[in-house]
Length: 105
Image (tube, rainbow, N blue to C red; front, side, top):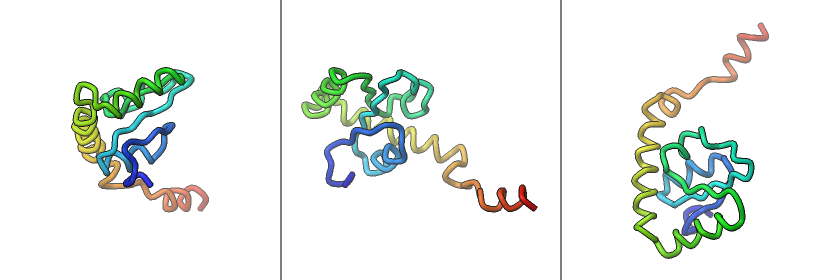
């Protein structure tokens, strides 16, 4: 579904990463203004919508490619993914089952 989309609108989820990998622009909905510390938001890799009006504005920007926004978001997404992978999260995923087993033994 993401592959066939021009862009995605989501709350904070793994769909953001999937869309970035597929080089699809992302609009993240933050109705409670509590996601500013999120890595992909702070790096400007996604557009942020706080209400219906800002969601419409984000969609208009993407549909018209205002200020070459799609290319900018793709560049920032690649940077984010490179940084995200370099901290080891993707290279060495935690083995939660092993940790759980240790804790209950």
